[in-house]
Length: 120
Image (cartoon, rainbow, N blue to C red; front, side, top):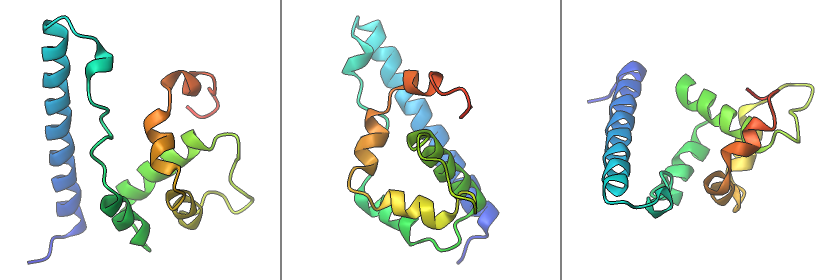
């Protein structure tokens, strides 16, 4: 049985809420034990190449997926603004296929974003 786009989005939201709850519990436990936040697993550590490939294959991604990936692109590549046509899905996909994409996402420091207020 197929799932309407809104059903898919709700399932994704539920999954994200569960992940957020899990990471919060881990963070709380590490802090309770006197650990450091550096002891925590990176929240994006479990993203697989297969999951990225699924996103790459979308010719017309659901609106929430497209918007999130556009935001990721704009944050990571703030120094190279989109061309005159604006930010296209093709541009985002080209970034996704780069072997350095996931590494760049995982290594991104929030302080870099604070230094680029025009993005926010």
